[in-house]
Image (tube, rainbow, N blue to C red; front, side):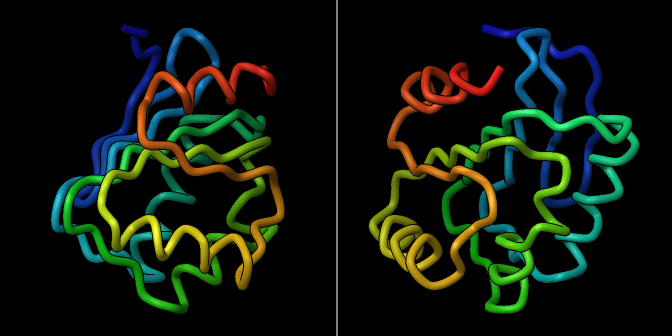
Length: 129
């Protein structure tokens, strides 16, 4: 288990800069993500990461939803300005379908992959450290 150097708690997520140089975002179960939540994440990244770029792992809780505007924004260069790569850990069929759509339609501006386990996601992100 990686220890956190610093973290920020939001209503919808916990964001941590880990000792290994990976940023971990744990989205709370049943969260509804819109532009407002994306902007809260950006403020947290700015405070936590001091304008540096890191590999990011998103642990997506059960029943998390994201609206179209937020999804489009999440793929943009502006939203990914603190990221060198994005790994998402997802388990539900709905999230897997959305993941394929996100990659093909929204086309994130940094390398992005989806995984069913945290270990696989972390191993991939280590390539970007």
